[in-house]
Length: 220
Length: 365
Image (cartoon, rainbow over all chains, first blue to last red):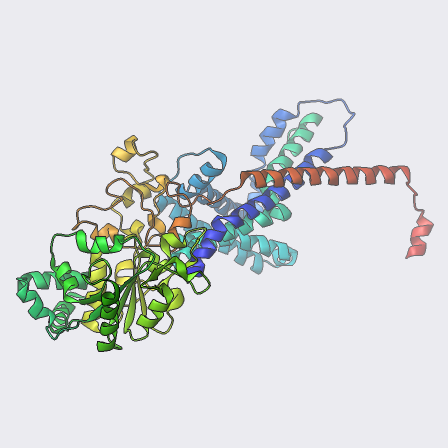
């Protein structure tokens, strides 16, 4: 049973460096590739600015237009709920803030634990709902690939293990904490090589969209 | 040597009142999470209990555990219980020395074969280590443990060194230290970790053994659940501040003065299972967190190697920023190379472009 302590020390020690190194390697490969490739030069005369519309679109495209919402209210609503919940649990839980502060040197105030706990519970339910929805919806099930289920799993695992560790539902505790940290590391390792890269690229893509439209002088 | 006197007789001789004795039994029952209806049963069992012979082996240790047990109280009922056991061998406390001391141990073993309790404090050099790092009367710790445990009813590992290896086991572990449970497999082992453990936990474990004649319910680390069943964090009086998000950021800021949570100052309470928060130290006077010091997690395995004492629990232990930056730089190089490669391929295709005709396509089909 001492093994669980060794396991915790391993994920807090060497494995942490391995996971972060793979994450850093993968993310820089992807981002450098995207930015250096750039776009084809546009020789047409610009009819408007790029930055303003680009930045504006980063915000406007994050909110579904009424048509999309009417067609797929579940996707929009539940999608929003769990994305926000995930970010709250990730960024506003005090132990997470302490971790970020130790790595980057910047910290911010957190939320009281019972709030983060409730948000996590809602997020877990929402994530399960998305999986059920995906499996029951014939079109979505047809379109889903192994990667879709993989990224659902690696997103779900840090939340569920964190919830179990916080409520001490796995015994012994070092194992619970170790599993939570390891699941977050798996998330980091998988991120650059899967659709999870959208954490970085979604906003870049929205900026490009807005910038292209802005240059052409059309609203996006 | 074990005597025929019962605990009840012994306590009466020492002038302990019936009321005092029952109070102790009640406290013991509540500590062991037993219903109040069990108090008379505990009292009856303890009254009738015979002095068990105890052999106390001190290996690679600092005597802090013995100090905690013998010095932290003015005489109390716990001391009397402790007096009540027949401590037949204990380096620090026994009058005999040299051969006489070793004879006392052998004598106690012979007289109480299969009945005596072995208490160990301190780790010991493991089977693969040089036994010369710790010997007593020319006998290696491991040999002495093997010999003594053979006729024991149970083994109690007192303190984090005996339970988990403790300080001698900390990296780089020069003496090859191991814990008692790493070596003893054929006898029940009870771990009572702590640096040192709470005296009341020690007496509580003995009381439970005397009362029920069996070892208590243990957790995954062989610790009695009655005392190590809950985390410091869950029983901490500062817990409401943790839940509200109110933390001391330094040892002398407003938060520290207001008694806020010490998580950010490295408190290991969330991962530490012990009874300090409820039983407290020095006769219930105080305990580390109440004194403004974060919990070091001393009753947990490998607590010396579990990262900085004064850094939050969630902080990685050996973060290597250089390696991560190097990986990032390598990623940039690889990303750049991939771009250069695909641009060259695009240029190549542009210059060596060989358009296909409709006829060729149709022929391919």
